[in-house]
Length: 304
Image 1 (cartoon, rainbow, N blue to C red):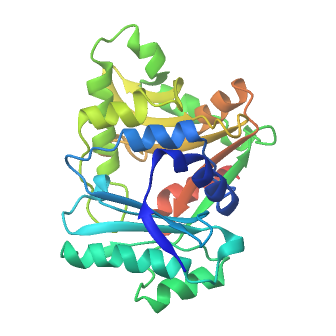
Image 2: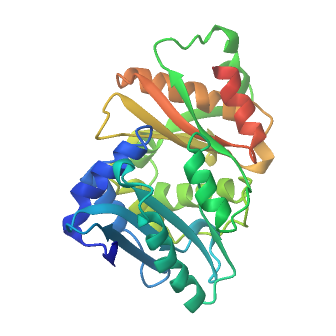
């Protein structure tokens, strides 16, 4: 018998234990996950988090139903379900799904998005059985920092320098530009809106941007890189830290404003990111690619 109840703060350690077992490629700590939850804007976006318990009161699963702030639609949602592997095939995932499916119906949802690992046939069957159809494929790309060979990319920095474009960081710009935060936020919105995705991009607020970037525990101001032409910021790329794996760095968005694309700016930013990771003692850079963004995938594949 599965019992469903609301998620509580005391559940974080067990949730992290389950999550990191299921997704070892994308690990969190309690501090990181709790920060992200605290940053959620409940006034603007819906979220329901629940846990599944077995007969003994042990938490064996977690599920979240929520709006997607970067692709906001009042009737479209994201649904994630995680069940501890030893407790699978006992109806716990079904109980979590049915509970949140009831909320979807009550809210008049028009669509819901979820995900399942290609390597887990059981998860594929679970979502397919419930009417989900494939819309995209995502995978994690990894770069061995020490093994990266920059020789094939010689001249990349000179190419942008010849166009008057320089690379800097948010840390450096903060000391010379008092408006760096709103200007970088504006750059983030421009770059983000052109990232291929299932639904149109919607802007998060400046306050939410600060929470998710500048004030976050994983934020590294020296590794938040900016491409600059004169006084204008024209491109960006950043690394974030991992408390669970200190020698692993995750790369976020690499973006360039439309009028500066195809000028080598994205490649220069990518190369600078590798150098930044090396200077920080990073062993590996991880990022996510998907079938909808072939342009960025080509750059990452070229870099190995």
